Length: 121
Length: 107
Image (cartoon, rainbow over the protein chains, first blue to last red):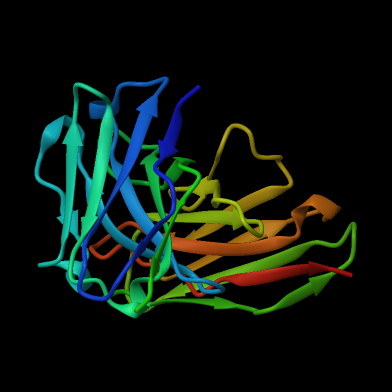
């Protein structure tokens, strides 16, 4: 059974950076797409970007380009999301999620438990 | 960016009812549309992908239909466990946007 285990809550000041981890188990990490999605308190879901199977370059939502990086450590089956120049409005729960597809992204069937990032001065 | 507009929002229904949630895209997403259910404090759960393919662990009372710009999630014989917020997501073009959500309340 695939599982995604995310790192714990983080608190940062505006302008700082945060790096969240997502450790995959029960399947081959490099065979499926991985999405990063966030949800501000009481709000809807916001797609941030996509990591492609086989180590191809990730695709980022335009809104986050320039301050987001998604990386993979295949030796530990862990993917990372780093967000820089944090703003108050980046306060959210961040989810990693595995896509059901292996050839094209079609929807996220396995999700991490979420990592709460709080940006506060 | 492709915008997804869900209706109705919110939605109140009784046990045993049939409900339909629609998702309209600002331009064609072909069949690259997924539906999720989310309960408070939990990650979303994938119900449907590619507009009409039911996930293996999802009850058959859930179904999806539509293509291009107009999609529908139908839940027949509503059960108490079906409360929550439902989201559609398009995966046709970057960014893979979500609808604003439809909160389903059980009367």
